[in-house]
Length: 355
Image 1 (cartoon, one colour):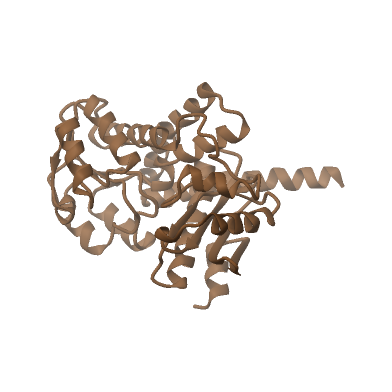
Image 2: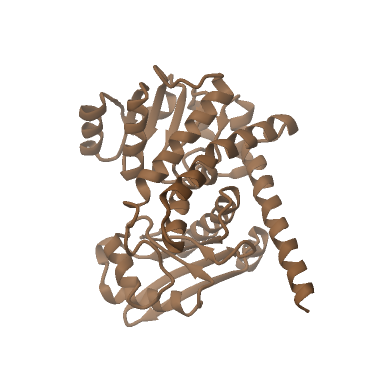
């Protein structure tokens, strides 16, 4: 399949390859859908194995943002950007050059901080464009609210799958102890859950062990633990044929993006195994909710109301999947596409009236 076929199959409106020599920069901006509003999606920096891998990441993440916004009822579309570079080679000139690429889109794409970018990097980008969020973390940053959304998602899954609203004594395996993963551990610990954790950083793992009494396990052991919930909070693509076979958890509910290595195949495998899967772009929407509310003028009450909708939305998705005998990621996609289609109908009616 060639490049244009790939983009068309995934339904993208626009994909931009950004390249410059002074400074040397390679970036990809993927705009998936703007039916609900301008495309919003953060920028990450990674030394991808090749440009094909970078494109695949941008395409999948941007489509996920479209569905994330629709399921969260946030009036923005989906986009994502990747800078192909080693984070050790960051320069002000590179981020300012990237900011100029973003600015040329004139608001079709609004970006912010993702993997390997800092708030300071975002402020540098903002010197060249106003189409950036997270310059000032008015709400304290996205990690706590993202973790709160994941925690609410775990509660919804436990209610649906285990018929319980009490997390006391629940065994949860958390993979990845970055800002979001650690906050998830704190919320679970405060609710009386028993934690099993892993991270490539032994220092982070030991800190969570000391603070929350967690049991630390090796990275390759986290999948096969006899737990109630497996919570992937690191990078994506970790739910594949091998890892799914190892899982014994009743629920998968975590913050990582693009958890399914192959959506159809591995979504079906999870369902056939009797595991309840919380679609990643639904459960981890807290970050998007956070930056959207910062963009329009932060209102804590409104933001937390939108955040708590994650709980109800997941229950709706679980019920739809059960009723139609489909996977939960298929049910989530249906819900998102229904809302996008309704938005397009409204736009078309408005255009006809204005004519």
